[in-house]
Length: 415
Image (tube, rainbow, N blue to C red; front, side):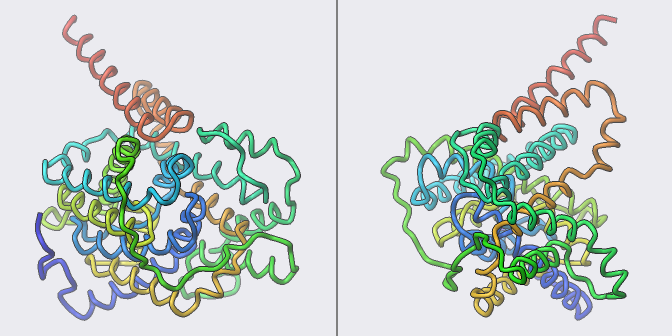
């Protein structure tokens, strides 16, 4: 593991300016997502923002990717919901330290390269499963009702819908937020606005203004403390009960982070000498998860959506991701009372929209044109991820992949 080198940072004023602009842009995109994932996980908006600030900066500084943006993600939320329900928020510092340590050890033992070779159709199935789960998880906020009982995502969703007594004003704000988000580019073009405003941020703002203007009775985010780094010492009195959740968190942090960084290099057409260093990335992500968890946040991973925005905003180095964290800190110090008034329904709309973007219909169409065997593995991975959980989903997907390869090779040997 190494410390950042001079070549990891902007080498001229042009690169510096591009990195600053990219960092500010990503911060605006990251804010509603950090708030949403913090609430959805069972912690708080403050926890999501703290994670984006602390983990985002640490992973950018110590990681092995020049373009990765880290923070709270939908995939990690999927794992954290049942863990927090069972062990409580107070277990998070210990869980974060344990999971972060496992990820760091994975880096030291050079496991990054192995994880980085997971077949793309297994990853696609895993990603589709995550997207569906993120959307389903928003049902309580979208319907304005209490979360249903249960441990599995589908059971919770079923019990949530079964409660009835929906808040139709909440549903309306979700619909308005989604419509605005998916038509945001057209609206800017019609208004002849050339400045780039992220769709998620614009939709969140519009949905909030509509709710406020109509004086709708909706649950808001609530108070967001301006102290984003409150130290809580981890306690390991029930360490045996936390081992399996910590392993699940660590595996997800490693897999999603390496996937996101790999996608970033591909999008940016990064030359070989500047491409992802997988084991160094694991070190940075492990350290980020451990520190974020003991300072009021939660485990983090590389975030595909925010990383993609970073690339499209012409970031050159890791400094852009560091700027993203510093801008978020500045926003919270100045404007926390304003963001506390955002309706949870608007957050739900933004996250449902994000899940649709993650699905990426174009990629799905291309994947479905491949061999039947690959499509079958993709489907098995997606269904397992949705119906069981993320780690079982990718494990079953990899098993199906190896069984398919074994069957192909055996058939060749018999000819």
